[in-house]
Picture 1 (cartoon, rainbow, N blue to C red):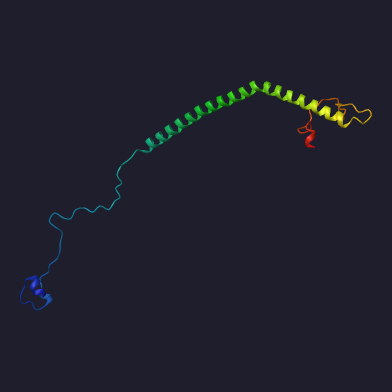
Picture 2: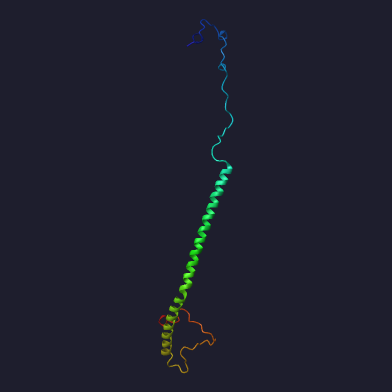
Length: 143
């Protein structure tokens, strides 16, 4: 299409003959352009977040304290039961020791029967103190 048809001006000879047509703002002007960052005020404030975190931390520490009290009570109960059963266990161990000691003395008497001057059950170290034998010492079959 030609310029003459578009501008509705028949018989124009030159572009210079064209009337000036310039775009302008609409009547009443353009709406304002938003160029600033406008962050909406959503969510809790910093004080509210701090108070919520402090409250959660305090409640957690309270729960830890309650758990420590329960754990301490259970531990004390365990130690008390061990203290209560200790004499029974010690008596059983003493009984076992006496039986093993008698077997050991019989074995020693049998082995050392040909040695003159040997006293069965006498301490060879002569320290004056009685010390229970080490583990396995009362079991001659293990040697």
